[in-house]
Image (cartoon, rainbow, N blue to C red; front, side, top):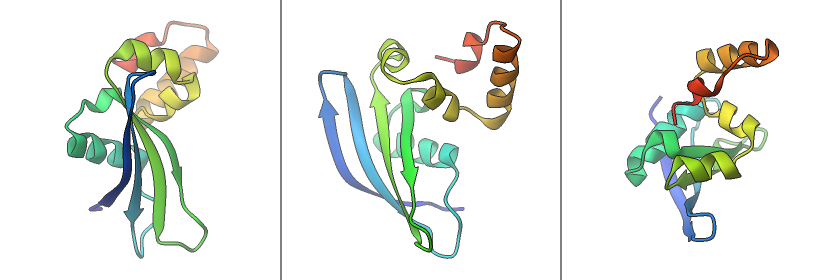
Length: 117
């Protein structure tokens, strides 16, 4: 699915050392776009590393053909790991890595290697 992403607001947050981008996606006749596709497309548009790009929120109204969202683009992995909650970091991984991470966490084994930071 080709995504038509329109960036509505872009601001630099110097306190947290990240770029905060608000965007809108029009997807008439299709469902809400995949989070990972949006992440890759926005990181390509901004010229940033997709590993340091976190989709904080994707929301669409019932019956609407548009989705609004917020993306945080960090400068380094240390800030990303400090400021972003665990569940948001997990949500921004591929599906196979998410399931493996959840299984490892349930067994109380090491799972940090799956984040690739």
